[in-house]
Image 1 (cartoon, rainbow, N blue to C red):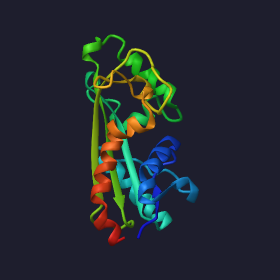
Image 2: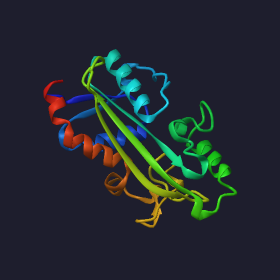
Image 3: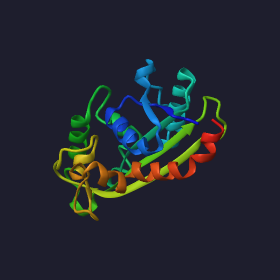
Length: 202
């Protein structure tokens, strides 16, 4: 039975969310940085491709089952940008603040009703680096882009992502609310529903 999974990311925000989500399964999610694994080169052209690349890389180096999350923000007025480049939208070495600033600048002339967007999340679980049938789960979360940040929870584009059904920004939600509604929460629930056969043969 699997009780330890390596997360193919060093993002502490993601690590915290995944550990909260997987705690009931008694699965410990450890960041690849604990094993001195460097980030894989994300050469894919889709969230699925990049998640597979990252999971295979982490599994190969650590020898553990690996979970990779490739997620990002699609803004319709920007033809789906920043998309797979969400984490590095403002350039290499830039953080959340720079990415959010660039997004606001790109949407300066866009009317509020034209700021539709969605978060996408693809999860890939590989039992080992040569796993020919990885488990792939996907979730999306519809919203709008605000003209200024709101809230102090979450990370990434959460302060700019307005959720109409809840009438607040993602960064104004509690961890429990975010798990219920978010793209990652939806993908993880799929994962939990489907992981049984993969755990048996890991």
